[in-house]
Length: 405
Image (tube, rainbow, N blue to C red; front, side):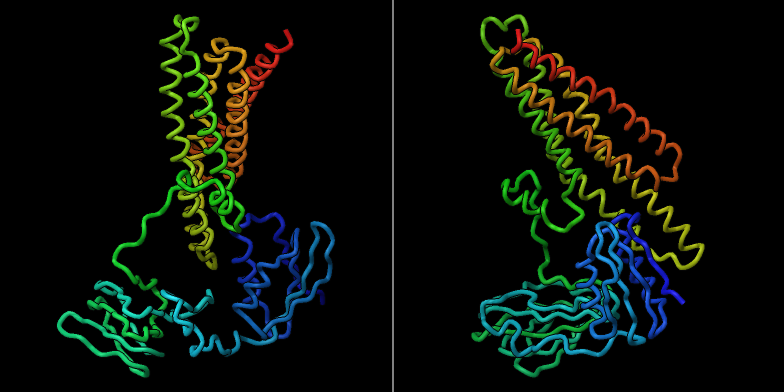
């Protein structure tokens, strides 16, 4: 009997790995499934090594372009017991601080971390999470300050932190390393206030491009579309401000309006860079919902639909901002000097890129949206972009024609 196949080539990226692990969980011991993918799933292999080391086998059957086939065989009924780390080495160099190790497996009932504090370092007083925590001191010394007293910590000490209890840790002269174990319900907070998140627009160009190149859902195409809006707006504002000479005096009111409106849309574009990534988070969460029963599948579909509507919002806003910028470019192009006209054309090229990228992203969400009103509204938004792209092309051709006269 042939091994069952799981073809994930047509699936959305966020849905692939959860579906593969669900299918693998249903495979009897000693049997296999054949995974069909359009590329070598190296990251999936890494996840199998993390979740099921030694309890599965991985055999390539085909490595043809867009037809990678891998036989995954279940060798044991559960994940195998294993050694996770050598606690005598983790954080022992004295330079590491913070969480130096944590449990990584997805399917688990417990969370555990190893925390290292440099000599004299303090974790400020805070209220703990809504769960009990065991702490085992691995090395060093220090103090644990509670609501009423202070406890001395030393290597080998085993401490219990009741849920929601007040605590503060201070490392001694040799630093402090300890292991925490608690239920897998929420992450432990080591400081009362998390650091402020840096906006994408405030990153350096190199840092932003580095984030864009990572294997991450955001930033991605939506952020680049929003950045194109900001680029276009900045170019139009600059071009308008060059129209400040006597020969442009008759257009002063129009030019001033264009510069101010472009400034507003530049700020809107940079804000939409972050909004796009934040809007996509609920989509990823919805795809992780269980779908074992009819009720779960219905709830999951509804959650996906609602999340996709929300995720389409920034893309629709980018299209609206791009449409307004195109109106400004059409007004400005006949006014600017010949030497500035290429910058107007460059702005329109960025507008066209923003429109095309956002239209594609919104269109990709439509099939998962069950609400007919929202789907029709977004479909109409996508349909309008064809006219915008045509108008953008006309502005660019008009600019180019100025240099053939």
